[in-house]
Image 1: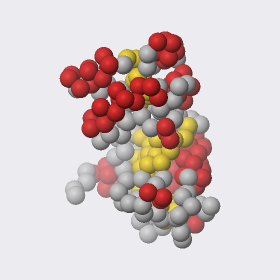
Image 2: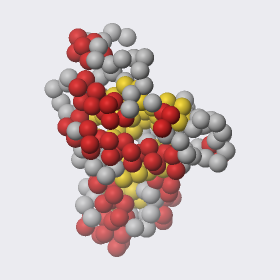
Image 3: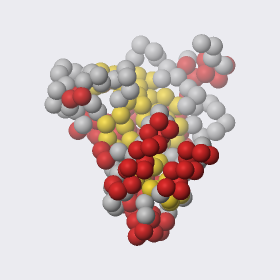
Length: 231
C-alpha cells in the first residue's frame, strides 16, 4: 500500500517498536494528524477472546464523556405516545411501517443510529439484511431496543457509541476528534477501556487486553502498552 507524503512525514514521528502510555500516544495522534479536516481519533483493541464462541462475545455501549464530535442523526421506530416522545427528544426521523418501506424501497439510510421500541422489532427485523451489515440494527444490549426512547435518543446524541468484536477479535471505535485535545481524548479513552474491561466474558482465559492502538483518520497507528489494563 502506497502512502502520501503527509502520511510518511507523520509516520516518522512514531517509534513503531515502542508501546506508548495512553496520554503520550494521544498527543502523538494530534501531532500526526495532517489532513485539512478535523480527523477522528480511532481506538483499536485486540482482546484475548474467541469471537466464534457464544460465551466469549464482547458487545455493548458506552457514553463517551466528551462525545464523539459528530452530529448524530437518529431514526426511531415507534408509534403513538412513544413516537411523540421521540420527536420531542430530537429524533430526526420517526416512523413505523412507513419508515420500513422507505428504507426497503427507496434505500433511505440518512441516519447514524436506529432506536426501536420492543413492539416494533417485528417490523425492524425485516430490515436485518439492510441494517445488519451497516451495524445499524437495534439491539437490547446496546440500549437501542427500549421503551424509553427519549433516554436512548439523549444518550445517542450525547456521544453513546456501540462496541463489538469483529471476526479478528478486535474492537474498533471512534473516541473523538483531534481538536478535542489530549485531556478530553484521554477521558473518552478511559471510558471505553473501562467498559471493555467490565465486559470481559467469564469464559475468557489468559491476557484479556492483547494489544491496543490509536490513530487519526489519515495517520499511522500508535501502539499503547496494554500491561496496565487488567481486570
